[in-house]
Length: 155
Image (cartoon, rainbow, N blue to C red; front, side, top):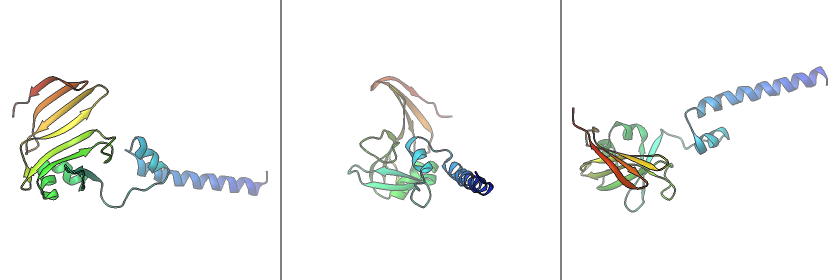
């Protein structure tokens, strides 16, 4: 192999390594299929990260993740209509996803309590919060059956 061919090979390798570094940084924190899509160069839609809530008619409502993380009252204000709204862990696929967050909104506010679902293999933990985002109850399910319910005393 000539020196010129060797230099071209090294140059090509260095370009590959430099190009791979931003992808790895850009994809950090992602898992599963989202990580695979990112590493393959598929970009997600522009704009801030979002969570998709669905109403009872399965109409999608996109909420900025920062708003959803701030409070469910902000979610209700942003949605601006009454009803029960559910977000799913699978990125919005109603058929394959597992419930993640569920809130009932009335007049731009949280009606009663809202829920966060934390699934595992055979178990499901449901954390129940009040409108001020304080955990008030925990439910533990095994294979779909309620096993334990714990009321969390306010501080």
